Length: 92
Image (cartoon, rainbow, N blue to C red; front, top):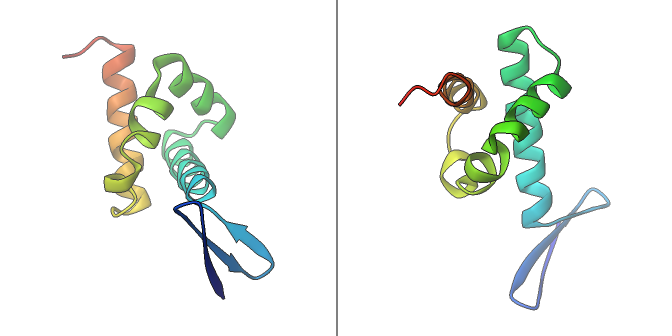
């Protein structure tokens, strides 16, 4: 593993792949969406479409990544499922 700084960003080079904050966020989103889709018995692509339609990927998963990524994938998946249900059914 190599760590180097470039323009205030930290890059970690592991196993031939350059890791950035953006790649970590995307990997987190994929894991959460796949976990939630499995719990809902739907495809990840269907869930992604539904989440995008409600703005949940940007406004929740990405915006609150720093807090959410400290939780388990199951916990965040359950939270996203509940959030999606509330948004789709206008529950406040």
